[in-house]
Length: 306
Image 1 (cartoon, rainbow, N blue to C red):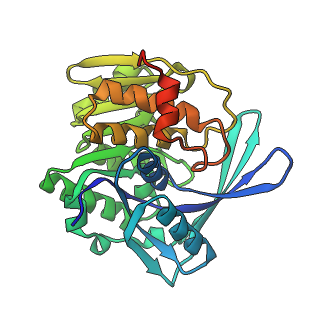
Image 2: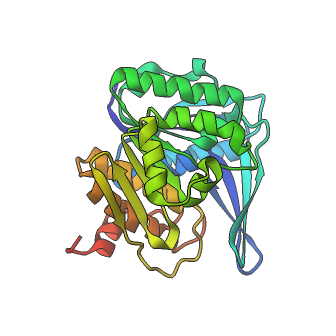
């Protein structure tokens, strides 16, 4: 079996994004799909693990994955459930998401869907709190995939991606902390850390997550940049100022770019600087996937000094 840089597991979604003129721009999203495509556009070999419904939205999502060179051998068809949808609107406080995903095909994932050989073929397995939150069987699937990755020596990447509309912090915390404890790369945000752990200072967040067992902790801080922490020390990577119009998939753009660079052998701090630039570029267009940058664009934004 071919070796993949990233195998990503979760729920892909069909997107409708409200434009300034009132029309809806169709597109695609889902945090772990965004990560897979972000990494693929930067040169990584990627595969996706999920279930899709038997509908128009699934057909278009499969076509997207094929265009983006995502391996779909582990994308199962489920005729008994729909593909999830979400809507993005924009206001003074930023973007707002509205979902139609209850009972989606992806929420019916279960550990028996997993191919251990596929996971063992990867450099990194990626999953998230959303992958866990969509159903109990999906959470079991994430746990089983992480266990397979650990046994095979595959790096585990996990994003807390807490969504209060999917589950409460009290329910989410044990599952997220269990995944975090096994993560080689653990990404969270200032907002997630406050909601899940009651911690606001990046050093406190890093200390908590490293204490659980995570090998490296990445904390996104919005305009302030990104905090990177390992047992060896901490570093703050300052934010990049751009004329952002939509930050829908910026965190996923960061994670995909980070995994792409780590797969190429880059040290963590350098990979995080690259990912910081990729995430900034991803906010220059509308939608989660359409603005994800290519390698030449990120290299140009970084310049020779980086």
